[in-house]
Image (cartoon, rainbow, N blue to C red; front, side):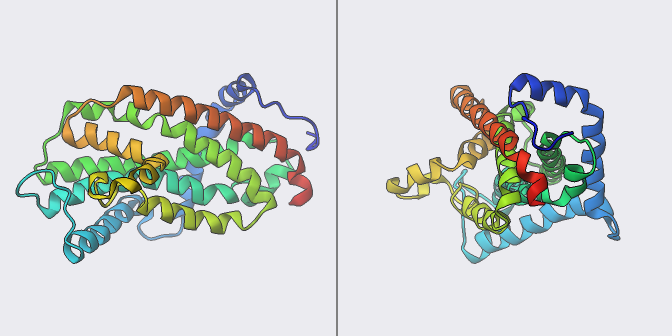
Amino acid sequence: MNPHSPNSASPVHLARVVWRNKYLIQKMIWRDIAGRYRGSLMGLMWSFLHPLLMLFVYTFVFSVVFKAKWDVGTGESRTVFAIVLFVGLLIHGLLGEVLNRSPNTVISQVNYVKKVVFPLELLPIITLGSALFHLLISVLVLILAMLALSVELHATMLLFPLVLLPMIPLALGCSWGLAALGVYVRDIGQLMGIITTVLLFLSPIFFPIDTLPPAYHPLIMANPLTLIIGESRAVLLWGQAPDWSALGLYLVGATLFCWAGFVAFQKMRKGFADVL
């Protein structure tokens, strides 16, 4: 394969590549997941322990040190606050993992760029697939925690995949764009750590939006996590139907952003071999 040859950025080309390599994608996602825990004593158990440990830390800091409340009703306990907090953290964790790992997606696979014929556009999909796996583990932890703490489970929980759906093209578009930029600008990886932290504290994870002055509401609503976090809590915790119109508009915008990221990746990939 000539690295300088033009690469199609059409959705049809992408769909064909994904379908043709669907089994390869599955194997590489699993290899990516297993490789992250290879050599550790507890292996995949860390995918359970990490979200739990972070949950305990954030719950202690905000509910014990800062006396934070979510105002879901009288007699709100730290348990309720912890569950509400955890839902926000798992949504942030999905996008945060994609943002932090994507700049190194191509850099870490130099052999695929130079020595073998490989559809490089699949690498960001593999990164997203790994992040979705860890999200699934976090959701399982959430359900087990709700059962153990006697928190009511609602039938609307089954709608959670539809609520999460608009974030998937958004994350994939970010992954394609950052993977390409990361080859040329190595500082992107360092910048993403700062951006994910900003997204964490400028989203309604630790506090309801209503507790902020109205002047700050547009800033919080501009965060791509805000809508998904709110709708996820609605279906997972409160037993409420999601705002389908808002999610639909989000999906349209995220899909356009995803395609823009893919186009950028396909245009910039012709220089990967020269830079690496």
